[in-house]
Length: 334
Image (cartoon, rainbow, N blue to C red; front, side, top):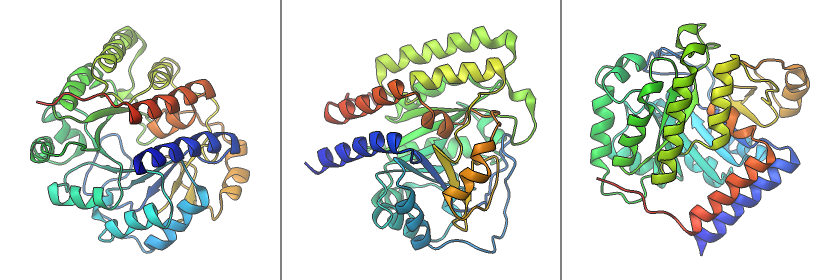
C-alpha cells in the first residue's frame, strides 16, 4: 500500500510540476572535488572548497523547488564525508519524491551502497562508458572497470538493486552500446545514456560525424529492440530521437535551463546547468538574468532531454512508470 501511494504521489507531482512550470529535474552538485580525470569533463582532480552548504540548507532548496527528480552529483559525491546526512535530509526534510545519486563508482562498495540506499536513494547512476578497460583511461582511474565489475558481483543477492549504467555516448564508444546494455542486463541492472557535448572541453573529436550517423541510427535501433525484449534500457524514444538530432545538427534549440532543470552549487546557490556556472540566490533571478536570454543549444545531456520532453512524450512516460510500478516485468539475471 505504501508503495502504491508513493508511486501515485510521484506521478501526481510529475504532471503538476509540468503545468505549474516548476523544475522537473534538479541536480545537487554537492562538491566540485573529484578523484577522476574524465576526458569529457572540464573539471576533475582534487580541490578545496571554501563554502559547502549544510545538509539542512540543501534540503531547504529541494523543498523550495519541489522537483520530480532530485539528483545528487558532483564532482564525486562520495568524497563528501557528510553524504549520508545530505541524502537523508533531502529525502526527508526536503521531501524528495525520487532521488538519484550519480557516481563514477571508484569509491563504491557493498557497505557504502547499502548505506546510500538506506538513506533514501532510489537509483544509483553509475558512470560506465566502455565494456572493458578502455573505461579506465577515459575516466582517468586505473582499474576502474574491474572495480565496477567486482562491485556488481558483490551485490548479486540484492533483488532490487536500483542501479543504472550511465553512458556518455560519443564517437569512440557508440558501437559498444549494445554490449554495455547486455552487461547491464546480465547483472540485473538498467542502462541510461547521455549525449557527449564539446562545450565542456572544446574536444570536438568525440562528436559523431555525418558519415557515421547511419551507423549510429542502426545502433539505436538495436537498443530499441533490446529495450522491448528485456526492459532494462531507461532511455526513452524521445531521448533516442534527440540524440540523433543533436549529432545531426550539432545543437538543439530552445534550451530550458533554469525553467525545466537547474543545478544547485556546493554552497546552495543556483546555476543554469552543469556547463554554465552561476551563483544565483533565487530561481526567479536565474530566469530573469539567464533563461530569458539563453540561446545556447550545445548539449543534449540526460537531465536536459528528460526535462524537455513534449507533453505527449512526458505523459506517456508517466503512464509507463505507473504501469511498470504496478505490473513490473521481471528482469533477467545471470
